[in-house]
Image (cartoon, rainbow, N blue to C red):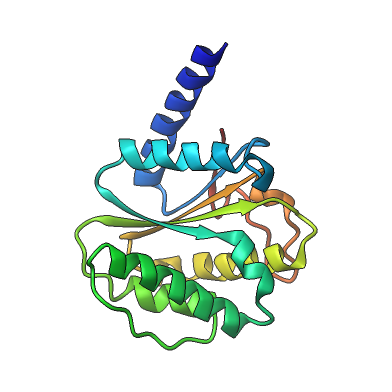
Length: 185
């Protein structure tokens, strides 16, 4: 039984790898991805990093945004998290001023000076009725709306416990398969 689970995860990782190379915005979901099952999420992320050597991963824990009170705080937190990882990988310092996540990702994507794809991995999204999570997904939806102006070196992977199309993002349109590639893990 355990061997079957490992084989299924390896297969899922390979499919996800191909999807990440082809698509700029991807949602991978499974009911197993939750804060209570944090080890499953960590194992999944480790497996994904190990199989995909040509991608720079930056993990963004969605739970951290619950403390933010407005878009500007969310954007500053995001830039802080990206900057910390970016600096730790020896890729330089980031000095961006921004007012929203969409603006931050747009500005940052256009100053990327790497020949590798950068993948922001937003994970531990779990409650479709949480306004904080909806706000984060609305910001990502706004980012996707400007995807044609962004560097193709930047990709976004959203890991959640259900498909992001379940979050009602009014007044933004929902994140469905028109905007993001969705894969059940």
